[in-house]
Length: 290
Image 1 (cartoon, rainbow, N blue to C red):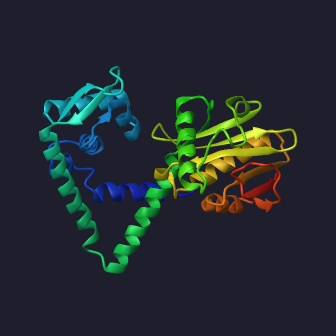
Image 2: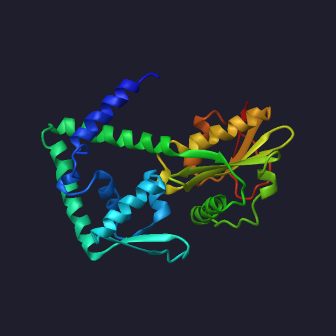
Image 3: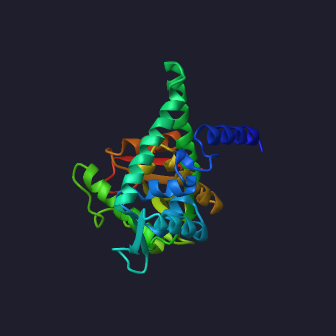
């Protein structure tokens, strides 16, 4: 595959520069993996299952790292306050002190990467890092067709409605908008596409299949996942589902407050048309021939 050698070379220089190859990361007597767990646990603590998901670690390796940190008296594991069946890990006072040390040492390493460079080179490196991080985060997002009544789907819909209530001039009442019940977003009548990052829901979109067209509904991306092209990925997945159903066109409507959504649709080949429904919150109607 094109670019594999470049990726391998990039990985090698990064692991060397940040000290990932050293037996004791940042000069401490523990591995990069163990230090990363301390960073992720942070001041607030975290459920163990979320920790595994964030770092894409298998349960056995995670358990070994946690046992070592417990032996060092840096963490404490208790039942989760939300669900006693789930383990929750938090830093001890010693763990918080160690995290502060790791943060200082990590800052020194970051400074050491920038100091030898001239200002234009620093700016170029930081810009490139931002681009790499954005693209890698985008690649880590997984899209799947889910039942709209699933907990993750319901989280997205609730977040979507809450955002609309804030952004629309007149607020937003889900009971007044054009309905899209779960039955209409479940195959074969429709599809609900869920976007997940590290097992956490970060976006969604839906397709209602009519006889003569497909209708795009419930397009939403979490604030934390914006700027990585996720809206386009969701839209293209819905378009692919519509093509597979041999629907000749797609339609959608949006509110005037959602300027970024309007730009998204125009960038992806939708053209503005006359109103084709009486959606009370709509100001713009779009269509795309497939």
